[in-house]
Amino acid sequence: MTMEAGRSAERFLVTGALGCIGAWTVRQLVHEDVPVVAFDLGTDPRRLALIMSPEELGKVTFVSGDITDPASVHAALQTHGVTNVIHPAALQVPFCRADPSRGAQVNVTGTVNVFEAVRKLGLTDAPVVYSGSIGMFSPSDVDPVTGRLEEDAVAHPSNHYGVYKLANEGTAKVYWQDNGVASVGLRPLTVYGVGRDQGLTSTPTVAIAAAVAGVPFQISFSGTTLFQYAADVASTLILASRSRLDGARVFNLGGSPVALTDWVAAIDAAVPGSGARISLAPTELPFPSEIAHDRLAELGDVVVTPYREAIAASAAIYRRLEAEGRFVPADHGVPTTPVSAGA
Image 1 (cartoon, helix red, strand yellow):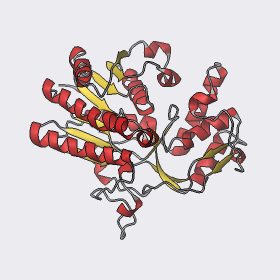
Image 2 (cartoon, rainbow, N blue to C red; image 1 turned 135 degrees about the vertical axis):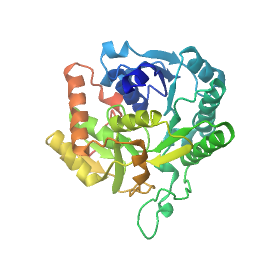
Image 3 (cartoon, rainbow, N blue to C red; image 1 turned 45 degrees about the vertical axis):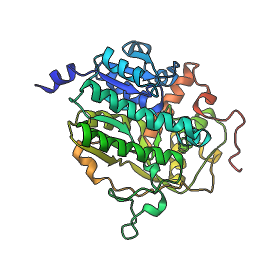
Image 4 (cartoon, rainbow, N blue to C red; image 1 turned 180 degrees about the vertical axis):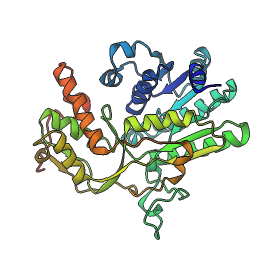
């Protein structure tokens, strides 16, 4: 079967499709003319509309469904003849901290529901692909010799979100061991790009929106972190879905290790004069920033967009929205009462 013929038979379902990573994943599939079902409990496609035209949105099949309801997940896969499942749906760190029970239902039970639906329907043409997280590791998990988080590091989560992400990797192993359901988990760290407007590591993206809005803003952490452009994460999720790997594989994502001072300088280059309005909180992230990811090559050629280029592209999208009268800073996480750069 040719690659073109294989792709013509694909039908993707993306969970959490109205979130940042989900939206970028849907966008790429539409750009490839691949049928895609957007599964989400919400009904507001605003993040999709930021990065897709009305004509492109018209090609998406929207299903309003609850990831915590096994029947809802099963019906979505069965009704729409899904062949490939990409599962980024999750509540992020602040939401898991505020409501641990709901966080467990969405992040853990929701993942079990995806695997169970795939098992019952016998979908074996592609591995289940889900979003893990470097957030399940702590600084103490870094190898003292290499100074990196190695790929075989043992995780010691420091918050509920990390515990849930670690549990999902165990779920994937059991479904492969007991049922032969293959999977690929991808662990990003600091995802950025238009649509990343909430979560612990969202403020570097919000700073780009604040720069375009011309208001002061403080990024909520400093130091260095590993950045992954949302468009690249989406590409890698799709690549993993087409990999036909067996087993319960898990990969750390690569990306761009960037000091936040350099990040601000890149925003200033994209939006001249904005750097003076952006400050950094003194606290550093409680996660490792040097991440080993050699095994990721098993998926093939993984795209990593240079961060300065991606920041400029993000600023250009915000400017386009502004020119169209569709740029509402608060919708992008920019506080209505700006934080002073000197605060």
